[in-house]
Image (tube, rainbow, N blue to C red; front, side, top):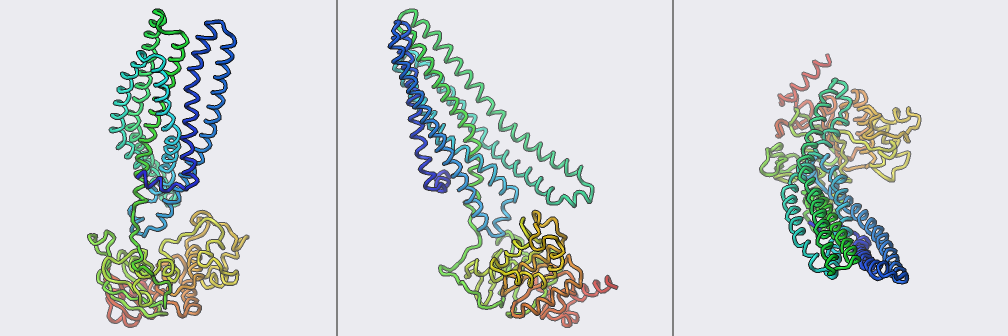
Length: 576
């Protein structure tokens, strides 16, 4: 895991990360020299009444302090540069990996969990990275250097540390073993809280419409309380770390003061040496305190690193099978050859069963069926948003698995059941279909989708800024913009997944007529609940429980499909 994360660090950040420990070592060496010079100031200067010695040793202390400061400032700069660059690379790697995920991969991670990993977990990892290249180097070097200097001054007094260090080490190891799984559970609770907030904000209109604010507040409070209890469970052990450290520090100071004082009385130790020794004790115990802080941070970051690695190690299920994939889609013909699909893989429940269907290029196909009949799932196999569990899907006579994904998806435009727009202007959203589209082409697509009139009714027209998800548009307006965006792509296959459900029948009819006139050679698949939306199609596919129940024209299906006839008659009664 560490090797993988280190591999994400850019070369320039690696140089900064490797330079930081060298600067830290320089800083520490200057610091540990100061108490030794202080002993000279006291023993040979103050006690002997030698002003020149005081100035000489004092000047040395000032010089060491300035050098230590210079090394410290440089180390701070390089460590921040390296850690910020590292976190940027990790975020990019996570985001790029998510972009490579198929729908099946995304289904394994909740949106809230991915957001937490990109923010909280990466932040923990950034802090841990900076602490590792600074404090994780500084603390051991300081500990070893100060201990060696203390041994040089008085080996007998230094044996006090032989008792304190094992106590501290054993305590930290015990706390680490128990706390790590608790931090993992805590981060899972963060995911849950984020999911609750995200769901509430997305569905705010529904919440207010049904007056469910109090219910949603209770659910949020429950999620927040779950997180609080998880944090307390993890932190209540970590809080023992501070008292243990403080106890050991004070015990060492008392022991050194007692035994050192006895040595001064007996004449086996000078006052300056004791003062210097006490300074080294402070450095040693401070380094142990820093190690304790690093220990806490690494516990949290270890859980975060595991969650980040889980995403980075997730293998995208959609892969190009051929070494040299096909980059051109010959035409818009589609064939389903014995296609079976389940969301859980081969062991999951089959939602599509034995689908055999051939569609000619340029044909208009209507698809109807009850809720849960897998209409959307069927069309999502065409651009490889999912892969068939069994059988083959062919586009232009070639298995979709043999295509370059970019080439295939550029020729298969989808207007999904859930319309998604992005923050930005209407023009910027439309240019997703074709970045090089001219204003004339944009307006032509919008006229075909019956969107031009409502766009020009806005004061800023095509430069109107949309809120996140297009919140300042109605459902029908969003659908028409998404259709216009798809038309700008000039695809060989156009899939409309119930994408005119929020528009009136007149607008729906206008859109279908425009599609026939402007895209005569494009294969069009129209999923709809309204019979009127598909009755003029060349053929209509009736799905029932994941199987094709019937295929034919409107007249043919009225004669031989009980399901189609029942739906049609019920809708006609509703109109009457």
